[in-house]
Image 1 (cartoon, helix red, strand yellow):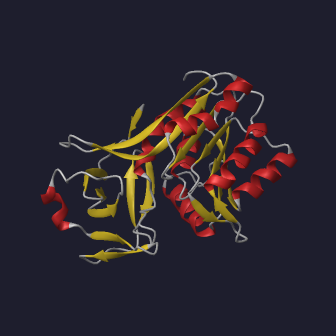
Image 2 (spheres, one colour):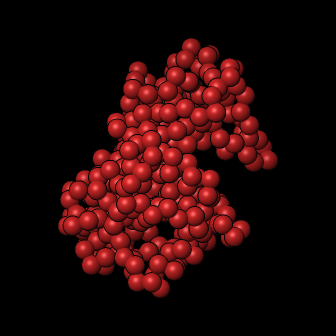
Image 3 (cartoon, helix red, strand yellow):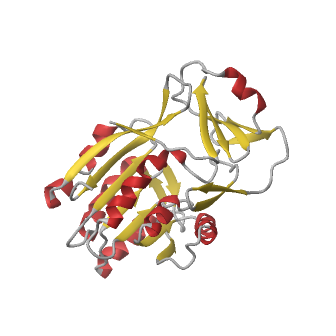
Length: 289
């Protein structure tokens, strides 16, 4: 199954190839690495006037080179939401456009829940999924280990008219927070998680996906409410696959029934014959929405 990312007037996926992906964020075009883009670029002329190029280092990390002076941040409007974007030291822009293929799905799950839908969003980054769920009427617990990311997400919420939405902003190590929620007896109707390959918690706790993911999922299963609605699990780790991710969510089918599907998130540009694989997903829902 392929889930195709959306586009909008202020964001456009333009091309991919030769190890890169070309995108427009607002008025600026950027060339960022994509190791899976092993084919030749389909529209070479589009790559000649990039505002910024991100260069990966063989020792990890990387750096940007810019062809012009850019503002520190600028707003990107998508539907009725506003995201503040900028080139970061990790090559990210503050928004994962590939995740837009799930926005409508999450909104439907929230709106079709019985009563208020309580959503736990883990590894929540700058909060696009948090805002999507809140806009649809959910109460959201937004958790990220990096306080600066949560400040960024709050700013996005304020600019999107969601400053007073029922969102709990939590800066904490995800695994430790989930363990405490279990001891408190907290429950959620929906869970969204996008775990990184590697990471660090607020206290320097190490996250290694191959070691820490299964224990986390085993803690999450008991947090589901008596009327669970959905789980959305996305991942960009090399070596993962839709089949693997679907296997990891089988306990939800065993416990609650429902439907389980998995696939590849893809980016598709106008005028391009190829799509760009941009991570994998598995998603469970109690009833088809």
